[in-house]
Image (cartoon, rainbow, N blue to C red):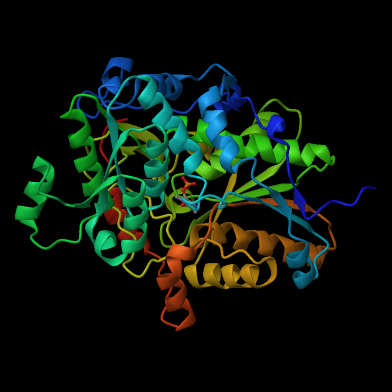
Length: 455
Ligand SMILES: *Cc1c(COP(=O)(O)O)cnc(C)c1O
């Protein structure tokens, strides 16, 4: 048989021409978004007050299997895609495993993660609608960076509300965003009513993602020509991220490789949802069987310990309700949590697949995640983002299991990004200052109490 190269590249003309919409093949569709005031499904019109029109269409589309990727977006994708599918020969050698390990590397762009795949699509539709700009929130800054790049490309105004502690303590991403022309405001700020209210109630607060979302939404709905955009969780974001899975499948098909297990880290679920989408489609249509594993932090275990219920998407409780596995919108990961993936809920699509038994989930504690990150970096060269290292950890576990059983399984995982902006967390790990925290059942009960009674 032909030797599999270290990197399987696709040609430009082999890039997908359409995104794959897994909802079209799902027997149980993800539940609709609800209006928090009325409890009724959000109408198109209501959604269009907050989101771009074409993105609302994509959000609500449960029937079209493929949606063409506009030429303008494909042109941008071509600057950093197709991304390589790498055979981790060196990691296999190090682990002495019969397993064959592949990873799809999404960190080869300035934003350093897969988030650019959806950012460019969302910016394109905003531009096409004739909007002046978009608003969003960012925590550590990956999403804000990706959106800034996308807005610069389409000459759109980009207003990013960045959680104040990150704004002050993580100045590097902030400066990348400003390089791309974004207006970055530390949140809470005095530029919005909700920000002023929070500042007066909690002077000196470091802010939170929930508060930043509330400010970004207020900014968008109170300025004509602006809409709010979100970097994960939503159906439309998973749709855009299907480019990851489609390329992965095309690369594997080139060499007749059929994966046994596909693994991804799960925060809001966008990279994992995109990576597994075409494979889930095959499974749903009864064409082939695969195992899918979502990996989440033990300190923020929405799939493995959450409730499948309607909940607010934001701590500020201004966004629609989504039915998802959630820890409650009041959930806050322990302050020592350093590995990202800190969102309280999970994409409605992945939540439904998990509830239907089509996907597995497991947790990893952060010291194990950083150990895996280091092991990977030392043999494969790439410095992984801590988020991505959750997937590495479970890929290594599965490969070591193969070593025990002697099975030569094919494992594919998503390497979502690089960790250059996460070196404070790496320092904590190296200095032995990183600890693990697993919330108690009693603590989770407290945040479940913040679930709305609707649904
Ligand atoms: C944002 C991010 C994630 C998690 O987001 P998902 O929506 O769950 O994919 C994972 N890895 C990296 C590098 C990220 O920036």
